[in-house]
Structure formats: C-alpha cells, structure tokens
Picture 1 (cartoon, rainbow, N blue to C red):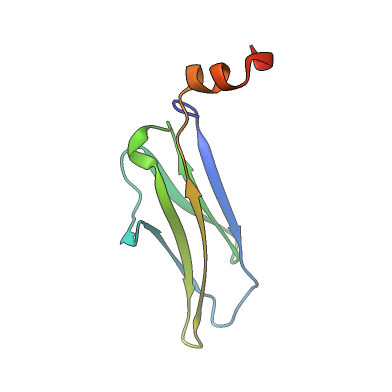
Picture 2 (cartoon, rainbow, N blue to C red):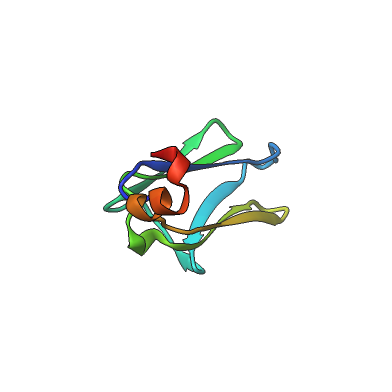
Length: 94
C-alpha cells in the first residue's frame, strides 16, 4: 500500500563459499539508496526494505545469490495500491 514501509526477506540455503546477494528491480542492479535499503541477516537471509512505498517501486524485484560454485535467484512482483482505492474496493475494511 502506498506510503507504508515494506520489506522482502529471502531465505537461502547456506552455501560454501558463502554467497553474495545481489538485488535487481526490473533487471537493473540495486544498491542501498534513497527510499530503500538492503541488508544481510546472517549468511543466508537478504532483506530489501522500502521505507515509504510509492509508485516508483512498482515492478519485479529479484535477488540473486552467487558464489564460485553457482547461483540461484528468487523474485516477486510488487504492485502499489493507493489506500483510498483499497478501501473503495473493500468497503468492509473502512
């Protein structure tokens, strides 16, 4: 929902050597910047935090874990819904 904090946690199996996690939005590499941050929790969790959801964050997000042995990835699509549209579509939530 627009204006709220959103987070995506991806849990990977622990690999050796320990993989490096790379985040992408619509196949464009992401780094921590204005409006979001990327953190690692331990060796197998990568977290993307969007501090305030806006239309510009809509799209496909993918995280890729890479080490010398290989790589794996996981993705999700984020759609932004305005609060008043959500209430209009679900009047019992008002």
